[in-house]
Amino acid sequence: MAQPPQKIRRYRRPQPDDSALRRLRLTRQLSLEEVGAALHTSASVIHRHETVPNAVDWKWAMAYARLYDVDPADVMFGGERPKVPIVGYIGAGAQILPIDDFPKGSGLDEVPCPSGLNPQRTVAAIVRGSSMEPAIPDGWRVFYSRDPEQDVNGVVGKLCVVKLAEGPTMLKQVRRGVTAGRFNLISTNAVLLEDQTLEWASPVRAMQAPE
Image 1 (cartoon, one colour):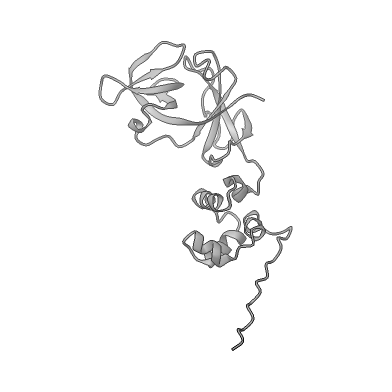
Image 2 (spheres, helix red, strand yellow):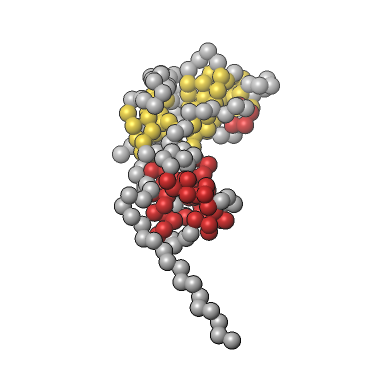
């Protein structure tokens, strides 16, 4: 008996008015159903993400980025590198300018957000002084989350932007202190600060040389 002819799949070409997310799918010749299956969701959810502005949050952007092997910014912003605010200058010694003493979303200037970081949660500070050299020279930018770690104990061993209780904001390597709940703050070329109480701490997620 003759076999029925196989159905030929036809793929629509990306159009100029398609969203960045839809273009990523169409250029890979994937259906809504195939992407939905790969991400363990429905085709209707994929369709909504592709057609409703701001429907994709960072968690979904990361999932699409892994599937399509692209940067999350390509998912959320169509490949245009988003910018984040520079909220101050920072060093391992005394603070030079207030950190984040600006209206939310603004700062001294703006710089492109490093790949893989959520631009909606990331801010930058410019390093001043030689206290962290040679690892972090003067003028470099450090990027960290605007939302500090809820459990300060979770940042032990990490380079962080830290806010001392009733004190300045600094760039320090965090170690456990002698007293429970307190921390030793280390930098390459500055005096060790022992047994400090921290108001908050946010790990450095990326570093960038000045242009």
